[in-house]
Length: 358
Image (cartoon, rainbow, N blue to C red; front, side, top):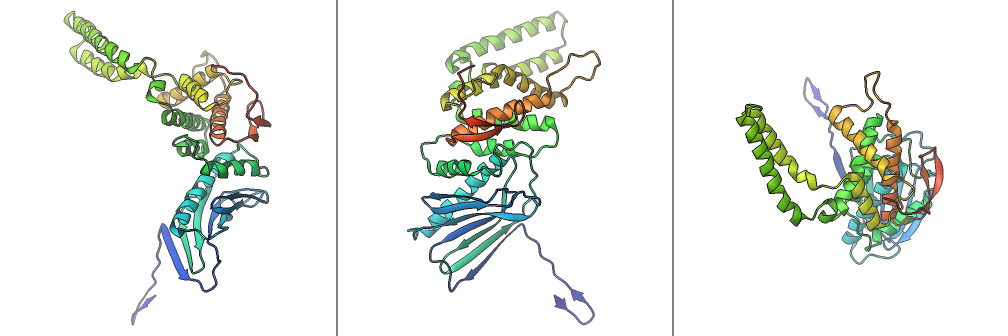
């Protein structure tokens, strides 16, 4: 506070991120990293050993105050790292990996606004401004049964044989808060689209080989142009309409060779070994149509009294979330129980014993 003869000025500072450091006289002999969590719920704690040391996560159960910072991830090295900076970098990546997968498991974002690092000589604490997560009603795991999932989450971070790409984006969409069912379906299918777009080869996303489609596309374009020209000559069509249609058709021709979401999901499930034999890919196709109606029309259910009855939108949501769940669990090689909501909430085994189906 600054003082003058006749006035006072009180300074108030705000920042989105702040780091505090100080020297320690009696810090831990081995480095310790910790993140303080918001939105994490767990009965007791979950613990595992890993190449970086002993890692654990804990939080209140039930978490009646998700807006509060009341959980943590803790990592303690079991031997002195040869490179402290590298250990720190790896610990931050591990924490991010665990928070991401726990966000998937609890079906809402788990955040870490506070991070600490303690060594024998230094203490550092970083505070970050973050929004408050909102709980979702469809978790993949119960907060009292997280240990098997936590074990898989930790081990998958160090498993170099896992080749999945950009799964973090799929989890972000899967865990994103949505108030309306339409938004939940859009988020779930976007999550699925990300998985296929990031983990399939270009050839797997095409109906025809690229070399063949290159030969087909020019004749198609020429045919459309000729037909439009004839219509303009016969005054059946205005030149401006023909021009606009030809430009639009030329842009869309490239998409003719794209496979459907249903087919891409099936191909990726074969590649990863994801058990989908008890789930209908035809239903997935209908769910995708529903998503397209929502995106392009702004609504799903018909408004006219005599319109045909449509499948409940929430059924589509549950199907797509079930498919995404199985992809993520396969990606981290999880084996054990998880929660399914199709046909009512119940525990099921993963992987399930199902037959292959397209």
